[in-house]
Image 1: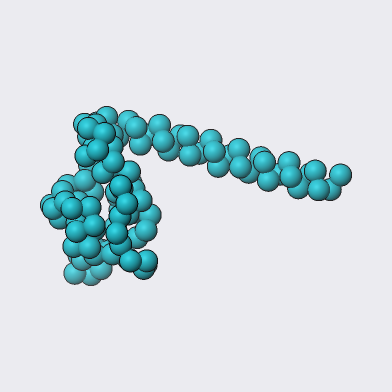
Image 2: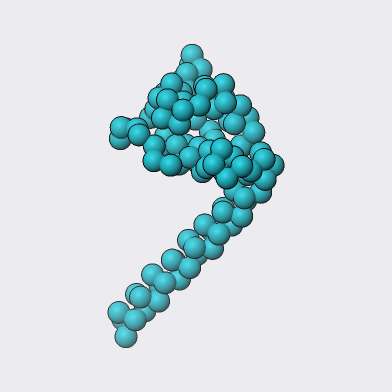
Length: 105
C-alpha cells in the first residue's frame, strides 16, 4: 500500500487516518496494542507521528487489514520481522568491516 503523505517531520492523527483510510480511534487503539507505535505528544496531548511511526503503522496495517492477521498474529510477525532486521543489521556491520579489511590488504 502506498501512503500519500507529504514529506515532513511529524504528522497529525488526522493526516495519518486519512492516508490509511481508517478512523482515528483505530490508530489510538493500535497504539495501545502495539508497543512500536509511540507518537510524540505535546503538553495538550496532541499526537505527532514521525516517519518511523508511519512505517510501523504501515506494517501493522498491512498485516492486519491486508493479510488478515489477528492482533496477536500481527504481534508475533512483528517480533519475527524485528529479529530478522537485527540479523540484517549485524550482517551489514560485518560486511562493512570485511570491506575495510579488504581495502587495507
